[in-house]
Length: 294
Image (cartoon, rainbow, N blue to C red; front, side):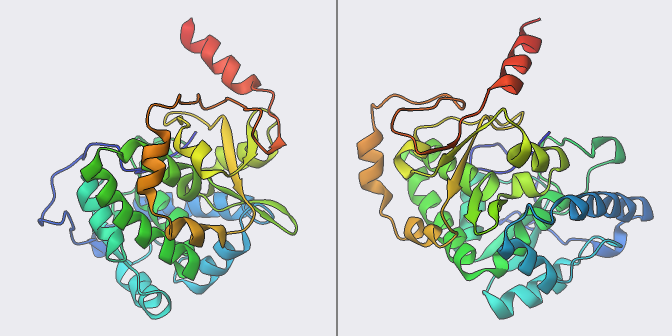
């Protein structure tokens, strides 16, 4: 299962200490059990990701003070990020209000949950914790393309919120930063944090015959619903991460007008206009639907 990420459409889960919802990470207060949980998750993912994670993710992980033995210190992460891309990691108690989330991104601050899941929650958590946020997201903030894209998304999110268009923009974040795949010379690779931080979805996204893998198209993605409580039925694939630079420069206002009133698509839909890399069987989604109806 997935860790449920913040795509700009969820209510806050806790009360913040500061107006911007930041809190002290409290690194010294982590227990031995919490560090052990991080180690279990870290080692499981680092066994799975070689040959599956994109080159930029691997490079970012190597360059940062992230290891198996302890939960990373946000101050040390921020020191390295600031030198490379101007980003920093700030601790928050859980999901934060949309405007707070976007404002942090717009100022190159990545809000990361500072708590870690319990041992019985290794495979699914209802909100993003320190493993999802730091292991899944932070390595790619070392990449200048992702760094610029995330800032632009924050700025665009504030505008979309004021226009009532947040659901459409949230889909772009979901199908790129959270659940995106990218074509690299060696084959399809993961760059989405929701996949990279989940052992089961790491395998499902690339190896399972059930999901569709479709070439990314902005107009299409903005009209496509997604699953927040299960594996994705479709993954959208970039030709390279550099395509995110084009998205970062887009004026979304014409896109909002263009899709207004147009029909929306279910997560597993395949359209005649799609550039399909893999037409999925849909077997997993069909089985899950049958199970839910029992």
